[in-house]
Image (cartoon, rainbow, N blue to C red; front, side):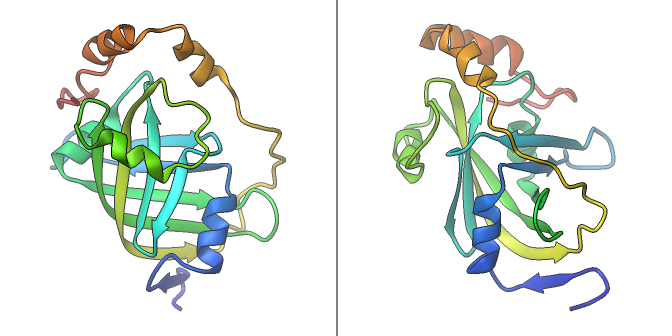
Length: 186
C-alpha cells in the first residue's frame, strides 16, 4: 500500500464482488500521440458487464451518439475502467488494461454473447468490448457522494427497438463512422 491506495495482483474475491455490485462504471480512452480528445463515458444497465476472470472483463457496447471507445481501442488499445461506491463504504477501483472491440459484424461476435447470462436486450449491441486487465488499484473515494440507485433507464434499449437491423447498419455508417478526432470506428 502507498499513499495512493493499493495495487492488487488480480480482480478476484471482494474486488470482483465490488465490481459486480456497481450499477455503473466509467470508461476512459484516448487516441495515440499528444493531439486528440481524451474520452470518458459512463456505462450502465444490469446484465451488460461481466467479469470473465482475474484479468479479463467485458461489456456489451450499444449503439450511441459516439463511438470514441471503439476508435481509440482500434488506434492503441489503452483503456481504464473506474468503479465508484455511491453507497456503503467509500471506494474507487480502477482497472487499467488493453481492450479489443469485437463488432457485431465480426464472425466471432455471436460466440462472445454467451458470456452475458442476463443481458437486457441484444438487438442494438454494436460490439463486445473485452479488456485484458494489467493493473488493479483502489483509492479512498472519500469525496464520492452518497447516492441512491433507483434503477436502470430503458431509453437506450427502447429507442433502438424501433430500428431494424438494416437501420442499425445505416446508423453505424452515418453516426458512428469516425471518432470526434476523425479516427475510423468500424
